[in-house]
Image (cartoon, rainbow, N blue to C red):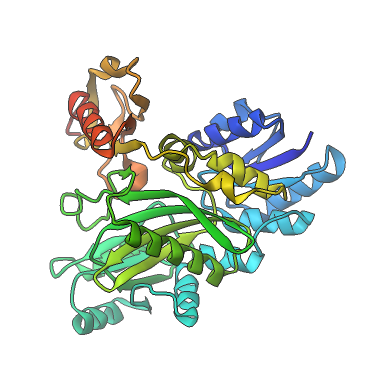
Length: 406
């Protein structure tokens, strides 16, 4: 029995942990939360923050030498590529180079690598002060995007317009950077796409291709809040192929030969451009649920096998179907929740794949400033993308999360 170390035990990692168990693996889960949901499924549990590289590495080395050998390490729905790569390097396991993980964890360094490699990306510049941000805004005009160099989950990411207080925006973005560094980039107009690829010997196979939904861009301004996505893509096949090629080129530019590449892409009037990529399995139930539902590809299972150093044939990554799948999120008004109605109506419907509410009566709904502030989600299926979207909207429109101001 091989052993896989999974650096993440949150709720979104649970389906991936379950898949690892189904593959017959001995599963070790490390997470900083002693009550992490993933611990309930693990063979062994280690309490160590997913961001604490030294502690996780030390724990993995001790386990490897005193308990049982570790054959692979991976994260699921946790943006901790440097932790995973460091453990892999420390134990001599398959994985991306540590330098690649460093680039993936630093958006500025990543963009600089893209620029040097000729990868089409948004214009960008580091920002040292609010006066510099004002100067850039005067030169470039609006809209712009300011973001922390080293954060995740849309924390601190703001879309700047002429009405935005740049002093506040600069401080807000900086507050979410562990190193107090921020950058500014152009806002790319055009359809946004999430890609998720497996790189096998330098070639990318991209069954994950989701049209992202930003219908609430103005409602939550200046925060950039995504409201889900849908498959299959409505883009032309030639545009999809161009975006997939760009994801492969971006992965290669960062040094990924074998592993996962998750891309945030935009189809602009000048062609596809990459905003950024991540070298890990996605969150938002994309890798664990949405991709398999839409394509029939066992994405997480294949990623785990790559992490173990096993051979994965390219035919295993090719979609076997193109079914409709949609995800949407709940955004109740901020305040104290007093009532949740109608959720039971969707308990046994076959087209409701998953429905999760993060709040109940008595809980506080905070203003939506990043993706961690969503109040719940629903994933629906259908024969077509339009069927899946309509069903997701039906669920969102029927379930009532009523709150009162605090």
